[in-house]
Length: 172
Image 1 (cartoon, rainbow, N blue to C red):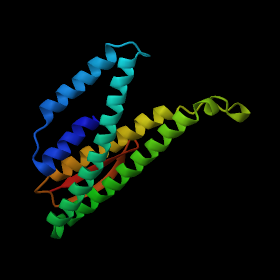
Image 2 (cartoon, rainbow, N blue to C red; image 1 turned 90 degrees about the horizontal axis):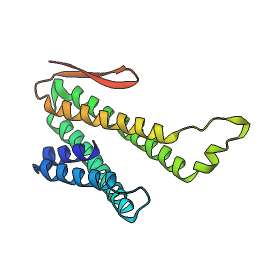
Image 3 (cartoon, one colour; image 1 turned 120 degrees about the vertical axis):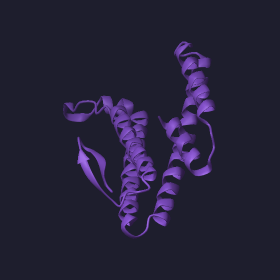
């Protein structure tokens, strides 16, 4: 999903057509990971490639979402200004979700042994699971930004919360 969102950002903001190369890259990495044994050098190469690609995609998504919001704030005036305000709020929610996800991932990676042996019989917190949930929520907010960017005739928008996820209600 991160690769798809990064490619969409590049297409919307720079006009670049990278869907085909991105699909080929994602397929190669997936096959490379699935076709190699877990502790082999080749497997580690493909996992490293995936991690570097995800990092690059995270940077592209951050730049792309900030640029989309800035563009909407410039283009959406008068009654449509509210849509740009909602877009900015969604961007903030997505950023907070992603920052919390990174913290969960780092704590889980660096303190795994400690987390398995918490005092007072506390259970293992499964922070890696929270990483996936929070990254999913962050990408969800980016998809909402894409939707807001597509709505050229929308006069108003507001955020509602459904199943702990932000949703945007549009009005023409």
